Length: 84
Figure 1: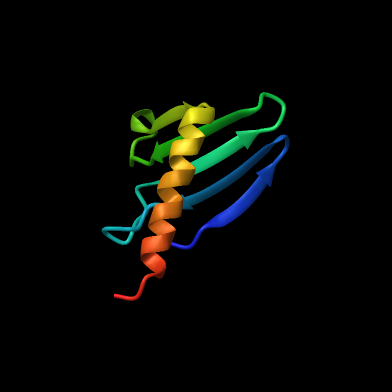
Figure 2 (figure 1 turned 60 degrees about the horizontal axis):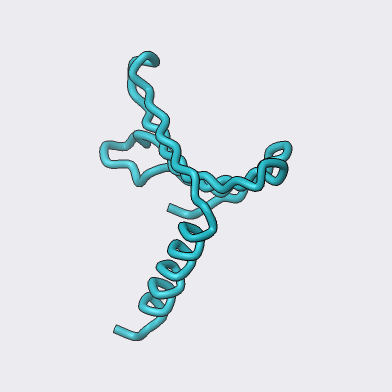
C-alpha cells in the first residue's frame, strides 16, 4: 500500500491501511512524532465490525529504538535496491 503523510495539530504522522485481505482494510498502522512532547509512537489500530471490539496498540520509541528502526530500514532499502 502506498504511504500517505498527514499533519494534524502538533503531531506529524505517517500512516497507511493494512493490505486488504477480503476487500476490506482491517486496520491501519501509523508512526507519529509529537513535537511538544518530543515523543515518537508506533500505533496499530484494528477495525472490527463491532465498535466495542476495536483495538488500538501503541508503542513509544526512545532514541535507541529509533536508531534500531532507522538501521533496519536502511538495510531493507539497500537490499530492495539491489538487483535480483
